[in-house]
Amino acid sequence: MAKAPPVDKRRQILDAAIHVFARQGFHASRVSDIADEAGVAYGLVYHYFESKDEVLNELFTERWSLLLGAIEEVDGQPIGAREKLDTVARFIVDSYRHEPDLMKVIIVEVTRAANSFGRTHLPEIRRAYDMIAKIVADAQQAGTFRKDVDPEFASMWFYGAIEQLLSGWVFELIPGGEADFDRAREMVVETICGGLDAPATPRTRTASGSS
Amino acid sequence: MAKAPPVDKRRQILDAAIHVFARQGFHASRVSDIADEAGVAYGLVYHYFESKDEVLNELFTERWSLLLGAIEEVDGQPIGAREKLDTVARFIVDSYRHEPDLMKVIIVEVTRAANSFGRTHLPEIRRAYDMIAKIVADAQQAGTFRKDVDPEFASMWFYGAIEQLLSGWVFELIPGGEADFDRAREMVVETICGGLDAPATPRTRTASGSS
DNA sequence: CTGCTTAGATTGACTGGTCAGTCAGCCGGG
DNA sequence: CCCGGCTGACTGACCAGTCAATCTAAGCAG
Image (cartoon, rainbow over all chains, first blue to last red; front, side, top):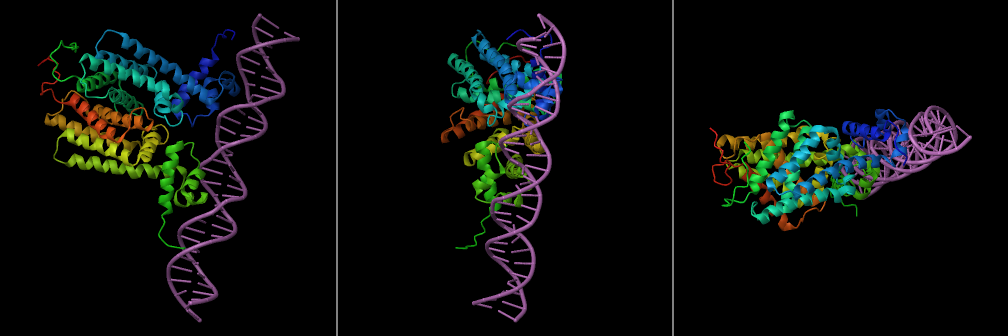
């Protein structure tokens, strides 16, 4: 691998693929569409990638590993579960805010397409769920979350709620103005954590007044 | 034995399609697979349906209209919001319990594929979200749910949480034994409604009583 | 009961179009 | 003049959808 020329065509192709996949969906996207959008020859796509699948692969893996890293990092921090979950939610929502097309592709074509393409990535996807479950389980151990809820299940609906939110924005089912992003995140975290909080705990208040 | 029990080939084809789509995914399913599974000739599929799409169409519409009906009916009942939402959740979970393949197809190929096939059905899908939002909004009006949460948003994450649960079962990410269905449903409804409840009950008090 | 007629159900070989992926060769810098 | 990035016409496979032919059953007259 000698070093790259001034213009990174590989990157150009990936960026083009994001927009093409977001616009038309993976299946309806031709490789020629990607090449056209990137302004390169058809064959060059196959110079850098083994197949059309591998392009999507790369897009997903790039971003998902960031998410996994973010969850892992936050989990190590000495903060409350609610803040941890809020940070995770913020990461996801901000990812959408800054790169809506990429997140749309990841959600629509991979995360929510576990039957076709996503099947390959189930282990990585699962890893995210597991880490969220761990955060919940730890909070139960510490007594901040009620213990009668399965952490694995809670993880599913926490993640599912957020993803559905992104879905709603992607398909314009709910208002997606700049102000809505943070507001929605706050609400979903507060609601779900509110539901998960241990009932009437006489220990030091976990919730820091953020108002 | 030329019996004449009106063997409904149309139904046979639809049922076959459920299993083929569930097994291979819509895109990877050939029309010939459906015909083979149904034990009929290739061409007969086109005698009863205009296209492969229309088969999926039919499967979705059939079931989704039941869901819409169920929500509508429960909304008219003089019961609390929590019970209403519980009934909705129960309908969805029971649908999965009794026809997992069909629900898998609907979720994977339509509901969560709003980019490709689901786009056609966005209005119907949206209708479900809207009706759930209405239940929440009414409860806020009545004072049982806190008013600072957007009903539209709450609807999204309520539905998203449940759908993610089904997803988890479909892809065996969480235990899906007979006992888990009701337990999961109870937990998700209790958690989310718990988070939505008006802070009249001393559950988790954010003591910031700003006037 | 039988033969004729017809309409709808059923069959499956075939067609037309679409693309993913290949490859033989072109350029431009070292 | 050599090499690796780069080009784009071409090919082989695949498959949704068509259609002409065949079958079945139902109605009806003789």
